[in-house]
Image (cartoon, rainbow, N blue to C red):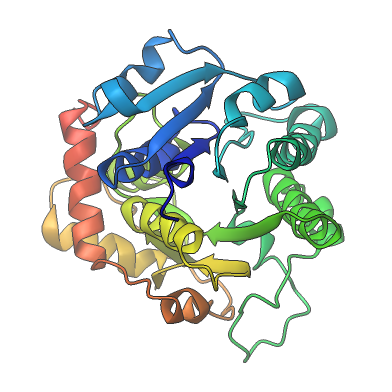
Length: 320
């Protein structure tokens, strides 16, 4: 992508955890970034303006996923779009269709339609591991790859509304790519850990922080699939820049049991209130990121991710 227009990209949900690291990486690589946020003046987006090169090359647009015109005005003039924004519930969900599924699916389709109108070359849609691995009929001894899709009926049954919203949005996005001229690639990150650039806690960082603070509840010794937020940002830029990238990509570095993860944390930081007991969980198939690695992706060691996460929580005063 040599021409200057090729260096202008849009990132939706710019203030979020993954999006912030993605924007930092794009700016460092010389891209001009249009970021969409609900409110550009909001304190929770202040960290974006502090990123290197942001004063020259980052422009925040006020946009909502369900407001087509606002999305189009942010996407116009871009040759690539990273659709990162997606509603993630932090509390109990009263009306999943309205609160999560519709904004995720309709929001994604709005972004894709705006991309067609703005003649965007390629769209990277951030899906989720929850669109891949929630499939009870997948053979137990077979590693889960990109051909594995989560079972929507199963997700409804267990009320995993976020997972369902990601499964529906991703399948609609790939379908849209097939029936239009738009080049759509999807990336499915698993549980994302690593240091935070934003000031508000995101769901996966909270999940990690609970391991350090809430040791009195017994935990299920489930297989955790983990990836570093900085490696996710690298993956997104890689699939955007590599012409041969196509279809969907699982983005996962480590599969580790909950107890082993806690033991690893404990060996580095012995003094937190860790879970004291674990309940056995059944074995489930691992997931592979081989397709992404073949494209040239690599990931950092788990220790680095854990240390940088904990240090980031400490710096933010979250562990006091």
